[in-house]
Length: 78
Image (cartoon, rainbow, N blue to C red; front, top):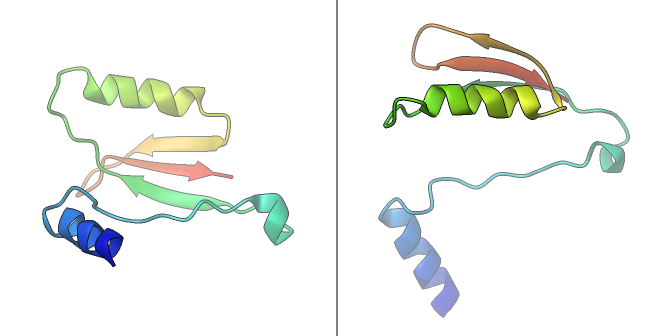
């Protein structure tokens, strides 16, 4: 269909990078806990600071740690 062609074009040029699923813990019958590695693009001087503030403000994030390697932050969320 026309929509699928547009979607594939957006994927091929990098506008659509990925698809995600947001799971409602109540719908699956138990809390879901995830560990997530995040890389922060540092195109602006305060990007990392703003990201850290957002993590602190998110009530579902239990713990976060700055890590070395290909990722910048590991966080644990429910």
